[in-house]
Image (tube, rainbow, N blue to C red; front, side, top):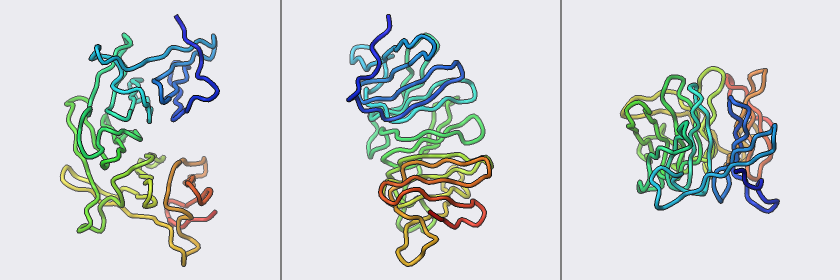
Length: 231
């Protein structure tokens, strides 16, 4: 049976189309699948008595991988939707904000990047193993902040990391033990710097320019090669 579509006053956190033509809607009250052909809506909710239900009803991020599997980031853990409608859970109950999965992106192979409130996570689905990279004040090329708002992989495979409060990082190198980023922050004296440090959206146009939406400084565009911003 289908449910009602999201109410007009219901908060929508994220939207994701899939390869089957469905629209997935992440809300504060669960995950919804909309069939655009019929208008039917199916809702997936957390059930504390079912270990294969979605781990939390606050859905923050969605991503379909190359194998057409849907990954769902929530306020408490990561989920992979299985073909039978059940969920496989990962990273639930992890401390230091790591369980709050705010963004998902591919690493260009079969592994995934997850943004969280506790750092950047590199995840291997085949082994169910992960590594967390965090800000280290003693390492100038570490993450600018542990609170990640958005991830975007551009057409050259570069990972752009939007931060809630410290601008944006571009991943330039990483190993199993460490990573290096180039950081972009708002500088009042530099008109070619990022316009605001609260980064909320990152995308790329057909010409290769990177567009950045902020929470107070409007929209920025940047050439990935020169790394200079304009608004």
